[in-house]
Image (cartoon, rainbow, N blue to C red; front, side, top):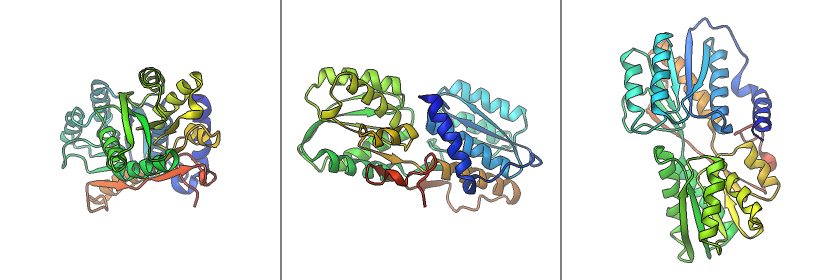
Length: 317
């Protein structure tokens, strides 16, 4: 499945050439791109888009991953410093734990541009570009209620606690769902954005709460793991599942009638924007954007608009 997802992503990256542009020589120096875990199609796309955008602007680009480990992240920052990177595009491993790594790069004179996740300190990174997770979660929760109805027992799959996005999405869900007194949260589990953990945690939740009719998930990978567990238990036809990311596998699951919706994060857009802002800063001393923290709005993909889904993580015009 992952191989197929990556093939679709690579094909899609070619299809969004107007967003990425063509490659170019590396006269501008090295731009280091550090993502979380490229086995997740979302983070894979993040790295591929940023790399292609950097090469378009004349940089050499390297992509590496820390897989959520701050020690690995710190070592990768050391490598970027040793290699005299002009700029670092980083998806931080931990909202608090990544602050030290960013400080180290800044002390070495390398500007850092954060994508997808934030750190809990402003004024270090030149920019923090993330999806508008609160807005996306509200959209997703509204769609989930519209699909499921306003009377149900449900469970929630939560992302990694070290990532502020997990709490923001969960709180966004609660803001909407708390308006419906007959929607009862029967249980929740942390599945750390991972499909395999989504599968195992869904098995446990289903065993403990056999009467549920809904699952709301912090991302697509956990939702897809839950779907696999529900299918195995013969329960999927009775339970509505919602996701968050806009991954190719999630879109396929919507088309198959297994996933009710996903919230599309514009990762291709803000990954490219981070590289453009880094290039602007290196050449002019300014990012070209007034604020460090920048939010990019999400959209909902459902069975009604799934055919508008174009390249990975991009809606057709």
